[in-house]
Image (cartoon, rainbow, N blue to C red):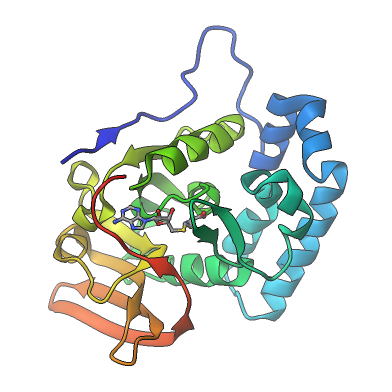
Length: 258
Ligand code: SAH
């Protein structure tokens, strides 16, 4: 496979500052005033908490998901010109024809993922695979909630930009991989959770194969009528249990690295 596994980052060199208490604080501490001017500045906390209240009202029940969404500076993952819209209930372009999902969809999918049948026994889910790193936002949200995040992106430029955007957050448990996520990422398998941010007509076999018993896969899948729906697949000791949930709109899952 043409994947290169990148270790956690940043490389901690001697004398590096201690990890920050929250990603937002980390971004502020590491990036300084220039980043504040570039984003929403000190106001972003208040705007983000408003988003969190909306998500709670919309039915996101897991406090830890709300807390994570409340701590990751979403505005730093989109272009400066779009930063003011970052906490609105809207999807946004992230370059190369791709989009970041609206906050409610990110929260919903992460919330579903944490409901994996084996989750309670584990405390934090051990390893999660994300297909479609995009700008890196959802990976940053997941990083607060699970032990290790493996995230695969097929577009080299997108992968590199995500690395740059994630660097100031100092999330040592996010592993960025350039590769074709339709092949999953075997070195990290089996996964307690797999979450896809791009939808095809079929679920690649590798995803089910790389899912641990007790694990859950959450992915958009294109149905017979051409529309996408969210699919949840649980792997139990007896086999796979599938549920199709609400309609969603994700970018297409494509094969190969570009
Ligand atoms: N979770 C992302 C959203 C990404 S948009 C975020 O928080 O920003 C979906 C991404 O999936 C796009 O960047 C697209 O290039 C990528 N993608 C599509 N097919 C893929 C594949 N087979 N392997 C890896 N990434 C893929």
